[in-house]
Length: 198
Image (cartoon, rainbow, N blue to C red):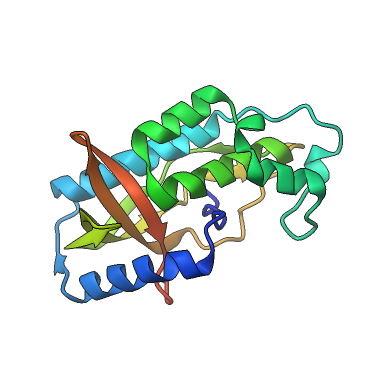
C-alpha cells in the first residue's frame, strides 16, 4: 500500500510520541516474526489495508483532479469533515482496529482515496527481525514495535486503473504503537524512522 499520508495532527503534537517511541526502541529486544505482538501488528495493519481497499470513490465532479499539493476549499472541507467523504462503514471498521493518531492518519488516507478515486489491492507482510519494547502512548501502557514491512504485493491504482506505486520501494521500516482498548489491541500510531530502509 502506498504509505498513508500525514494526518491532520501537527508536527508539534506528533513529536513527543516520536521521541517516546525512539527512546523505547533504544531499549528494544529483537523478536521472532511469529511473536504474538508481531503477528497482531501484521494482522491489524492488514485489516487497515483491507478496509482501505473497500473505500468507494466519490462521485464528485473534479474529485480525481484534487491533490495534496493543490489544496482547494473542497480539500479543506474534506479534512475538516471526513465523514462527508468516508462511509460510516469505513469509519466504523477503522475505529475497531485503530485509535489515536493512527485513526486520524488512516481516515485521512481513506478520504484521499475516496476523493481521488484510488483503489488499493493486496496486503503487506512483516519480514526480517522485528524489535519490541514496552512504552507509553498518551499516558497509557503500550507495545512499540519496529518492523520491516514488505509491501511488494500491494498495488495502488488511480481512477483510470493505472498502477501508481510501481517505482516505490517495497520494503520499509515502520514503527507501530499498539495499545489495549477495552480488551482489544489497536494501532495507536504508525511512524517511520529517519532511515526507513530494511
